[in-house]
Length: 184
Image 1: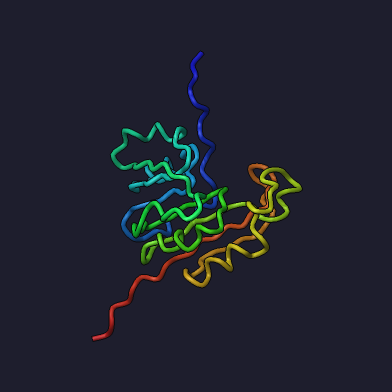
Image 2: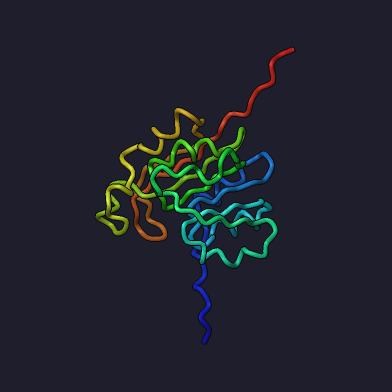
């Protein structure tokens, strides 16, 4: 018997379905990457992936991959500067994570023409399972309201998702407009 780490869960259907909408170069940020289910998806689809999490032990399998960069950082440290500075990515993926003070930096990380693919829990989830703390649950349409002033919304859902187990979720796909050349 080995002490192998359990396999990462499969990628989110929302992320998998919308990742092909990225039509720019192929850089991806997986924020709060966990065990790397979306890192693996991005690498399989030809992206150069930066995986960011406080605990990177679940990402060790990517250490030797030249297209993967693993960054350990506590994003919830008060007054800490944004760990990625001014870097931008063609696609930014966030699932099952919410830290509201991060939104301005997170939205600025989406490159012109790039996408934000975000999916996390919302109020009502506390009746179905974890998380139960309202600090980690979005209010009705909150994800839409936070993203819409900065990015163009492509798709949004606020629903009870039956799969893989019932959960109250909000999900969004949003694109940063690419600059348009001035007419001649």
